[in-house]
Image (cartoon, rainbow, N blue to C red; front, side, top):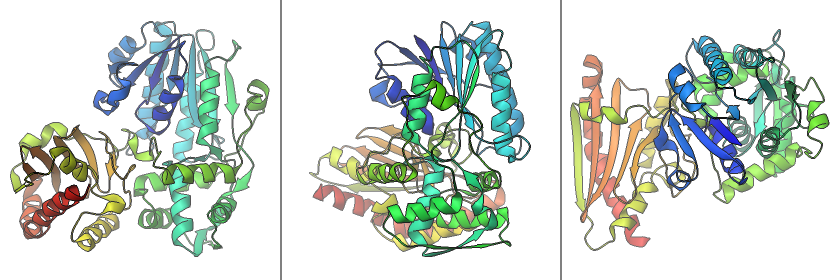
Length: 475
């Protein structure tokens, strides 16, 4: 079976790719915007085609010889025109599949009803309707899920951080809205089994575990974590205020938080029994078990993907790698690390940020992160996926990894709210650690910003380099 996987470097796609690769009877082709986000260890096991679903020519090429295609594309974090982009993307994909005589599309969408759903959920429903609009030419299996519980998922991160940080929570009145959360493990199993489902008709397959409110999710998560929490729903919290609060208390940025909050205002419950009828072997995990397993993945450093792996959102993309040569200002620090092996120095470089901190002046980094969050930036709360290793596309506090050459070079692009584009580069060369801040200002304000912050560079960056070398000496 020849399979095309879209969204292969996103939250669901990364995990589904690994699950599909367990089957020796399939050949997998990945359709990705940026091939460098596919990890090296998978590149000899898959075929990679670069493109995106808004480019019809790249789609037609990617779908040649394909039997089945997974559609895992959406615009959760995109700007105001996300609905138009979702429609165009789905229509292009459908037409390219029909032109290439693909037999089956498997689409993962969201639960909900068109009449009551938020704008983002309506767009997900509309995408499913478009993909399923040609049953005479192609079969579509439309899998619909609500809140997905798994390490790194946006919903899980929100629940975990709120429960962990707040003994008492003032909540919006729609915490009573009903949903049916489901483990990421079960979502992947439904998607995997769907490729072999013996049916020729198009189907909508609603999946979920027990029905509960968002209030129940918070309290049951607290119980799983061994905590006691109290919720006080009030009618005065608007979606805007709630989204801003989420941004301050969780790693989720304002646009994504707002989309999720708006989605909470409408019920996301199953509308059919097709999951039980067609997938009798799958018995969804309980909410508590789903949450416990997600916590275990974090504790055991086994987080495969995170919500910010996607390229659909501005704060998730890694555009900017090729623009570093346009930088107008540069601040360079060079430190000799003597007889310490270069690979140990680079390992220390890879460990920066997140819970590991930035070696010195962490309070200044936290202050800068808080200022960024106030202006709806990612701040430091996003942390990092793994405490020791990075990969291209990883989020790292308010940075994004845009280039990584093992034991040689790490390049980060800044995603803070700043008047320009900033990069932070680390290079291990000979016995030297070369650390360079690059900056391309936007207008006069961008130039003023550089000159105001440069004295802080002189304070922070030399000590950061010394801290990296000190950590390397203890590895």
